[in-house]
Picture 1: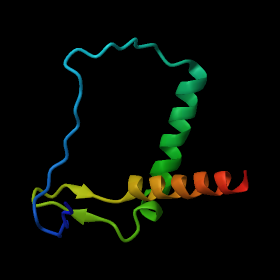
Picture 2: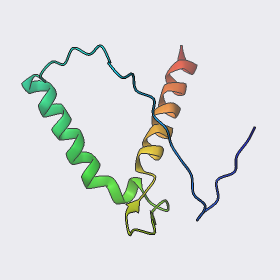
Picture 3: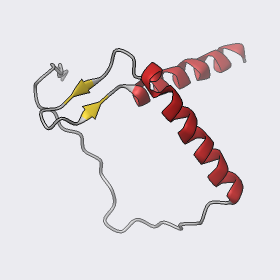
Picture 4: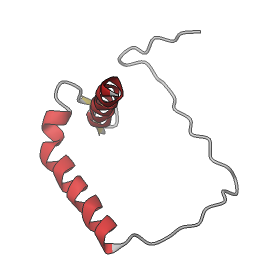
Length: 86
């Protein structure tokens, strides 16, 4: 079954999470924290370019954009290039 999403029509997204996940949380090292901060700063500095042409506002005035969708597309393309070179 295929569903076509249209602008202005409602949609839903579900994430299934176990009621009692078996997690072992560990604090980030200073190096990991620094890398995460650097990525966050690069993302903030390039957000307008990454979201170009994909920004929309909900009925509650919440701004959405395709930043992460564009980043995922670029990562898949890069991965495909690496695999093709093997």
